[in-house]
Image (cartoon, rainbow over all chains, first blue to last red; front, side, top):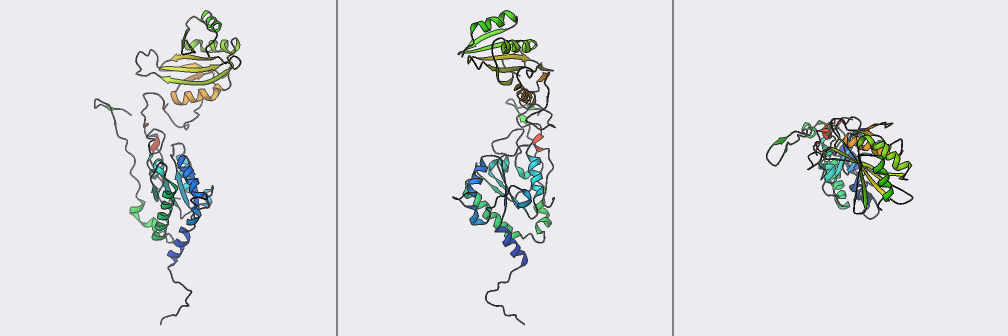
Length: 186
Length: 166
């Protein structure tokens, strides 16, 4: 027996509804450590207007956020802070690695700079650029919204997928070879 | 501005192993590391060099014609006469040590801590000889020339957080 619905009623899955709500009200946590942070500020300001995508409410407390935007290089002294802030954020939460330095260490291939935050915390979206323009960040947020809608977090589905949780391989340092082919000790 | 001749003459007559040179209007004094505190006291108390602008260091490992490994650099200024003076002192492995200048200039405190952090130079008589920039658990002194640019794995020594781990 078919039930007749009034015209102003839409039927959906609860999961999709929850994802739709979440993706259109992202609360970013700005972890801005370098020049990418300036572009991040520009993205939130009136000209580029992140409010069009429902992600304009920057909060400086991890308890009130669900999207961490790591903008800029992260040094080894800062990484424990980053991990702690990430752990303080409530599920469901997402992470954007903004710019070359946050994603790979960029030009800073030195003893103190972490070579990509994805070695130590999970990352959902990488934004290339040095620094990326606000349009690129906006595109990253739109893509992240698609991802949130697709995955659906209400049943904790993202935790079940073994492949998705696979840990990054530990970084293997390449040997330093001098001009005559000798391998030098690190 | 170059230093008045009477200052360098007074230094040379009072301290034996002192070398004074001039380059492009800048005066430089090379002193024995053991005499550093005496020379600095004399410069500050007698000759009016009341400002310690900077303390830093150079590692001369594998540098051509270098006799010593570490060369400390002290930049002094006389705020009244606008004279500026560079004082150099050389120290060596295995235990590079030099007297601290904190008794003379309070501002030497953090600058000497930075030199300790980056080069591992000990400053005798420093009230608070701790690392200033790097984390306390760091074991190396990274601006030494025998420290590899990419480090010894310090940048990878962290736990990996996966999804769902808090």
